[in-house]
Image (cartoon, rainbow, N blue to C red; front, side, top):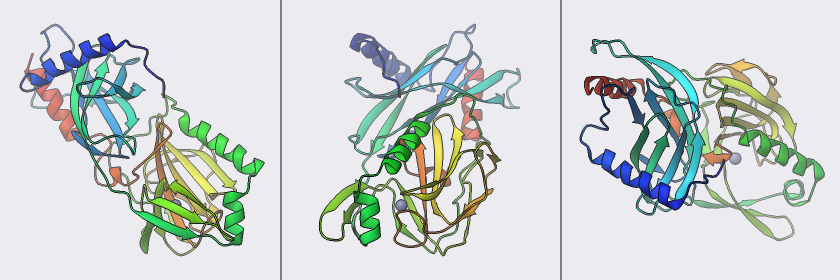
Length: 336
Ligand SMILES: [Zn+2]
């Protein structure tokens, strides 16, 4: 993620402008001649959730930047560059035709971000802002006893492990602006599990054979299932990794949006190769217990701009809420 070089004064001015815009009933108003633009942004998120904000605009927002800032002090938490999303038709009840496009801004709410009020600020063809409330989330703790083989796999230094970790981190930090694979709808669960054996964000203490322990945060969701169950892509995208890794076993990574990746680990068989396009539900492989694993399960993970985010967030809501987008566009057109 790139850092912003703006001065504190400029940020304060933007925050004041944001407060003024937010105070106007019915959203920001624009002069008749100016191209209309509105912001579609979640009002409430939890620690560890992804943040995907959309600008709906007649003018281009290519090159625009969004920032997540603490309300009041203006401290910048995260920043994101725009990617061009789909064109949106103007709603039929509005007489005049208008060409709107959705521009996406992807960020992540850090696990440890203090709960409270934040602002999403976008600076492009127009300055837009929205309030965002971040809620606390409780992450359970668990102890996992490792056998001798898993203790070695986890605790012993290995050039292969380090090279694989570096390669994956580099891949997940990439945000290719052209990688927009979106039909706007919700995710699907990659398989129907017997049970969830570990949650997203669990604080884990690995207990090594022969003593010693190490604590880490569980970056994904573990879905317990027998070996050989079909594992499906959660959303449309493109395969950017299909490899045998030391720690995560047979692993598939699918790119969905610039900087948004889903990961599928510990598989027993792979059905896809790098570069292949997938639809929601495309079979990626079969479940298994390869790599560092204490039994057959799918580790399903979601990364936004390199950060692990709750993979279940988009199971119950669309990536682009077309009804809300249409309502915002209608208000913008009627308001001029
Ligand atoms: Zn896991």
